[in-house]
Length: 351
Ligand SMILES: *Cc1c(COP(=O)(O)O)cnc(C)c1O
Image (cartoon, rainbow, N blue to C red; front, top):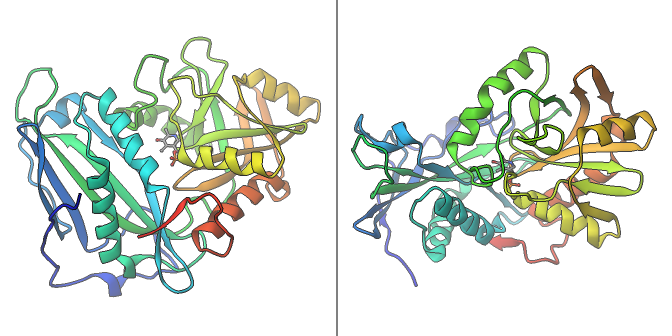
């Protein structure tokens, strides 16, 4: 099925103001955005128009009760300038999984995909050519009923905007394992990509930053010893000859980059396991010399090697220049995204 989008083009593009070699992450927006409304049980009012503030009533339910979900994905380009998407259908499915948990309406996958394709094609001049840079795509949905009183909203807005970004972390990251505050518990909303998970993470993240750490490493909410993930990324450990990542227990966000890396490394013959892993196991592996690498994975950073991990009084340091597996994973994904490395999985989709 093909949907009709109402199109209003900008009269003054800001494209020529962007320095593509030096883009501050998350602060530069392209010219156009996609919008849709959910009213009376139906998605409607599909339009692409200049990026602008969205007027909102003070009683807007999303402000008060937090029905707000999002996705994050990237478009890149190949040497011919063809715009490329990366596993967009998985983002459509995950957005709908988040919607179900937050009592929000699902979007027809073909609508989500058509909106992404149309907007990215329109904004393709905004896709940076530099390796590791990309056009970051942010689809999101929020409640719009103007009602005070806790219940699920009946109306929603779905919006997509895009922004050119450079590499997210250009330096290896330092992590602080947190055993006072928790991000999520099994049965909660940890596996939904919902705004509140981030609100809950800000205080511990700010405390970590004051101590000189980039991100918090979250431990499970019950025993505070099983490693879950870090800020905006899933986490991997190389111990001995094994690559280990925590299994998806319901509190962990099912990262698409995580899935790619599991597939890639298994294919390359590495022993890869998804299982519970405690912070004590990591500390012991380091003490006995078996801890080789730690890296985070997510759309924004792709793969971020960890240089330092602190847990209570223990500080683990790793040589970020000697992380073979994380470098292989990052180069493979970035290479696929520019079509300099073959994609035998069908992950790359022309926009
Ligand atoms: C989005 C996100 C990730 C990474 O998911 P990708 O699909 O790889 O981008 C990891 N953890 C959290 C909490 C996230 O919100």
